[in-house]
Every structure is written in C-alpha cells, then in structure tokens.
Length: 182
Picture 1: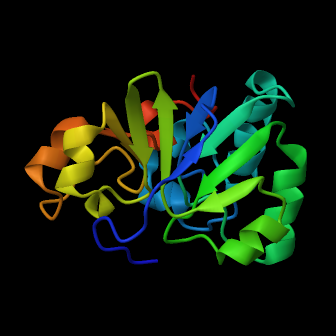
Picture 2 (picture 1 turned 180 degrees about the vertical axis):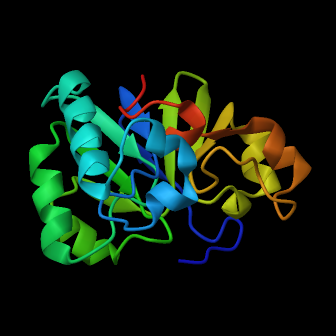
C-alpha cells in the first residue's frame, strides 16, 4: 500500500495500552531480512510461536493493542488463525504487506485503518505504518508520530526532517521486544 503524506485523515481511537508493529507472521524471509530475529528464532515456526507466546504472556483480553502494520503474510486463513490466539482488542493500521481492510476485518481485527490519532488531554499522537506518509502539519501538531515499516533501520531520506524528529519506530526490531510494549 502506497500512501502519500496526509492523504488519509487519522481516525481517533481509544488510547491503547500496548503497541507493536511488523510482526510479519508467516513471512518466509523475515529471518533473513531482520537478522536480530535469528537471536531468538531459528525457523519461521519458532518465530511465530515465540511472538504468539510473548503476546499471550502480557496482553489481557480486555486490553487494547495498536498494531502499526505488517501483521501477517500468507493465506487469509492463517491471518484469522493467528488473530484468534492473540488476546486483546487489536486496532490495525494497515501496512504494505497487509491484505485489504475488508480481509483484515474479516480475520478478526477490531478496527482497521490507514492512520490513527490517539488523544490524551490536550495532546495527541498519530500512527501510520510508513513514516514517509506523515505530513509536516501532522508532525507540527502531534506529540509523537508512531510508525513501523523501518525495522529499526532509521527513516529513509524521503522522510521530511521535521517528521523524523517526532517519529518513533514501533517495529519489534526497533524496540527489541517480541511482545507488544506499553
């Protein structure tokens, strides 16, 4: 999914307790692309099992999780099967590897958007999958810009410097956590 800056107005969502991005369940090449993952998984099945166990160990069924995209690759049935074993209410911000909004909703996500806004008093955060999709205006108004996509490799040069200052990569590779983080 390619998004130009600020083409989608962020939807206001409940303040989540947890955030994570770029789980890449079912992605055959993720261990090669993200070598840090090989420190805790030797195969894709190990990878997916470790992510599921870590999620189940921290997220309670009543809690909200913001997933900033690239949840799972593979057949629709696999997406739904993984979603069923993950506790919590999951708001998905679609990433470039995620299926259509309708397919992800059908798989069991509580909400699926291209951008979200989290309000807390007089402040707000904005979440998108790709940091290049944030506008300078969003950066100027938000406390923080939450994203995935970069896997801890930093923002590319296509990301405006004003955006880079407030951008926080929430991919598990950047956070060095296989579980969602508070």
